[in-house]
Image 1 (cartoon, helix red, strand yellow):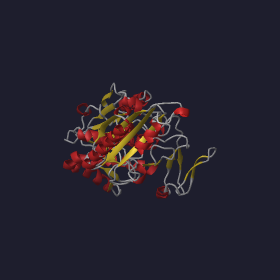
Image 2 (cartoon, rainbow, N blue to C red):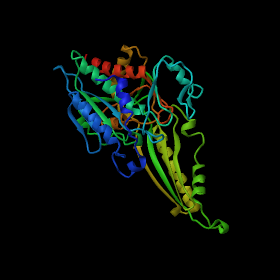
Image 3 (cartoon, one colour):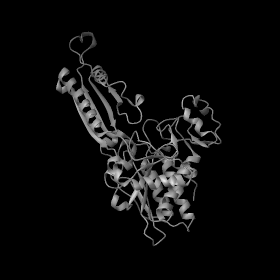
Image 4 (tube, rainbow, N blue to C red):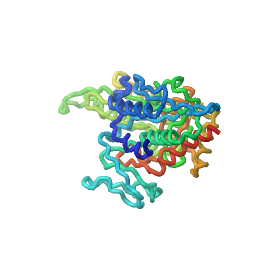
Length: 410
């Protein structure tokens, strides 16, 4: 049996970065490296006496720790994702623990002069006195969502070590490709067996989310006309120039960098091309469904405007919805949220609600009928080299899982 921290330091050594391009082509999981951690989790669940342990052909790991009482107690699921984001490398992660953080700068990599400073991230000072797990500045950490995995397994180890602790069925699942919006679409809910569930995929201590963005993905392919620059006047149609013009049509104040809370946005993730061809990949986000639909229409209207200007054959658009705001489906089941709220209060945490500016497996699962709000894991600066997580908050997340099980048994 391991502590939550020991689990975490083990899991981050696995390279599980997902690949959106491979995902869009239909490959699940999008990267073969995710299989290695899936097999490790299958092994860990089996060693701990879980039943119905399986790894699906899509790399979904699940199993159930059977109830240890005849009393009728809800079967509760805990779901986390194995993959890490593509914005920074997840290979050869070198995590280290900064004990009793003093509130100042942390040198992540002395030779490369990579420093994480509260001047850039003021919330670091909130963790003065904590033990922080950080990177060496060359990769992401993978707390999103390996901290969640570790917290669940830390709770499992505690429950197993305390045979006197009564609980119902504990259903655990580890999923691939959450970071590329796969969102547990291949999780067999009936086989999973939970009456309701929680994802551990949030942020700061006490955070609970039962609402999230509505999300769409859009790819625009632009076909230009290449002519020698020396004789190009009136003839060349640069795909890059047209792409830049298209990009300029979106409000500069409606981007991820200029919005917060319930404000939606358009975000150009990638822009690649040359004179002949260019490709722009966007995500579109809004919490409000009417505004979300209006954003998609505006996007399509911008493409149509460019088609009219340069020719219909010059612009191709592929747009599809990715996930929806779980609040619409969850509002009739707030007792599940209340269970997490009460669990946190009983262990001295001040819970607070936060509308997620993203999505989780739980968002899609809630729409499919498995009510699954999201709770904190204790990390910050996800998807980049400055990612860190508090050991003390991770332990509180583990304690929250245990308390949820205890209150459900009562």
